[in-house]
Image (cartoon, rainbow, N blue to C red; front, side):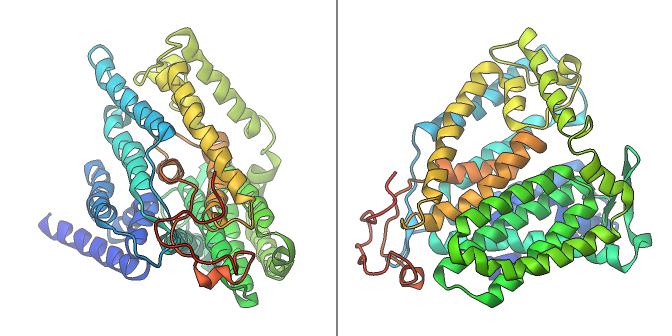
Length: 457
């Protein structure tokens, strides 16, 4: 057993060292969001004895040094940043998290837990919701740090896509085939799962698109257009192979938002890379099993697709007959007939009632709208933050609130922590690496600690 722990710790240190060396602390944050499946994949390959408790320790081990990095970070005079702000909306969402935790332990006095997950749900939510929010709140949101975070997400998503597509193309016999309702959903590792592969790959794609927006604003490059187009094509192929409809739709919606944010001649230039994307997608469709294509496209709008999500939402409304105002965190299956409703907002209604749903909507919706408005103000300095983050936000809105989200969706809460915890008022000197490329050139460089002339919302 001791040798097992040594192997696991060694692998974790190596992976974290690589991420930190390339992406620094932001690589750790990307690992906090997407790293657990990678650990489980390594454990499965090496056949290392593992337990649920050990899985639950992965994020706390990453959380502690990352929180220290955020806490000790000091802004540099030459960095453009968005200052932290713990305003009303951030307070509201924090109170919602504390309300859930308090309700869970109070209900434990008279309600039992249905299954192992429900017994440990307080711990999952503590790291996947509360911890993720805190990391987003405290992140020093500088131009370079945001670029590294989005780059790290894109790199991790591309790794998943390359493993999935590469293993499939090299030989189906080596794949672990998951069957659901007669459909074949291919995955290269049983420990990760087809849906997990699809979601992580699509998260990575949204991060890659955001990274591209930042790099393209600094210095357009035709070679980069082709590279990113190929990467997105590989990611799209991998999502197709997993047979995951939610990530497929979410990735497509994110790509549409990305093209709008890219805009004008830049979007036309990117069309060359899209030719490569189209070729890769065509290849992916040719090798995808017919049952998988039927699941992805034939059933998307049917009873097992959009209709199924609608039925899950209607089932969630059953909580209003039992505990409409504060909901219930335990025994949910016996009340609604489902473990979770596949949408964050409806699951919050189930577990915290109409009171919790109101707190969620009041804090999240105005913040999302504010950032979306800033994202489409292309000639404001704040665009270099709002544009890339809203590409990621587009994915989270569709995937986590329409397709397949639950309260413990870490990626959603990290992003919301970033959006809720920072003011849309850039501070520091304009960065010549991108300012001279657009309308910001010639506006001057305000001294550090003073608001930049654009983007005040």
